[in-house]
Length: 593
Image (tube, rainbow, N blue to C red; front, side, top):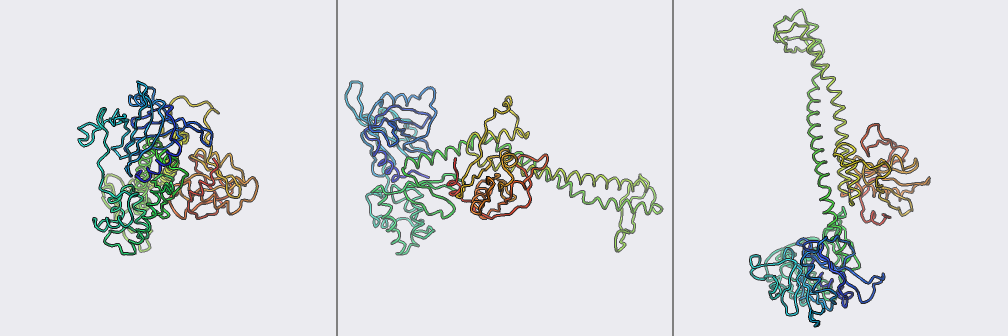
């Protein structure tokens, strides 16, 4: 995942079309490496807005520049660099956005007045170079006023970035500039270069393309493969030149398509300025109207996933520890249950001793007797306690039998309870992995506290005052409302209280997942809606990444909750099973809020 020079060129063109002539209204720095310029536009946008927010980041894992609609919380005291930017750029007018070739550097040229009232030009350089990314304010003489990251001689002897130092561009790379080159020149560089896979060779030879673009070119050339240069035939080079012509046109004429790549669980994976086909059916792509929308949505989703992962870390730890504890307990109980399988032997020993009391003496250590329970009347040697009488030895074996018989019954109950608890913990883990909001996390946290897995914090909320978390809502193509629970407590609410007898209930077969309800309103639910509801149920389950997922469905009147069962645990009868493949594009299309 990288914002390459060609995509940055597309962003520059996009920003130029709407921001030239805009004046800085506000400047915020809400983290150590992120800033927002609030710009006042010379003309209102289509929605009537007169201001836009320009986001700049020098973060090592997400350097970028684009318009954003997101909101950010500002610190109580602005950082020193933010104060400096406000001092120099307050009310400054953006007059030009410049990119040097396809370097991942944009220069925002502002016109403003100095302390003497003279009209001057200041430059904000946003350098997008991984861990070397930076935001630099440069004066009219080309010297650094300051930067969001100061780079001294100990950090870089080649290019220090410090106040008063003359600003210089990073050392040029020995690469072909995509907008000033022909496909034949790229081909010649590849033929004379190292014999590496085509995607790596392109990445080393051409400036302005990211790894995903290079892989896409190789995917087209080799029809889904990536081979070394020496294995390329003339037909391969013909296909390479053809596809390079398209890529060069995208770069030169701004004809690309803002495209993001997401996996089956809606996690953003990569983005590009062109359509992506290299992943086949394992990934999905989504196109946007603008590159700002692409980057804003991509990083908002990614950052939200990271924040949710961080905020749910304690819950994941509790669930993992609980699952380990249950597994260990079940293993010990299974072993004890296996030991109880010998209980019939103890009863036979007692019977055989009682039948042969006359031939056994106190002090004997063993007794070899005919086993009349055996069809072959085979002899069996029974260990004895020499301190006990024969009758006492028989009673000892009867006691072992009764103890093992009682233990087996109790162990079977405990094992059943443990297995049900393991299923419940697995269902909570599944709901946690699909949680996307803080409200969903809070609901899961409250559920675990109610079940005794977490310590309750603070006073319990007053009855009726708890924040009500709404289920997911979908509308089938036939117009039927489909409801999906977000956690086990909500699953119970939907299935046992909200649904009516003729509504249809769905759940993945023997797989943790959400309860899914088709609200029938007394009508006959068509097969097309049943199929869409099954797909939605599969997409909201642990099997979301699988194909041919079994989904059971039945009328809600056939679903019951056993007494004392954990939240979300139900039993059902008179059901049918549909085999479907989760379709996240369908799920997204049918979602209504």
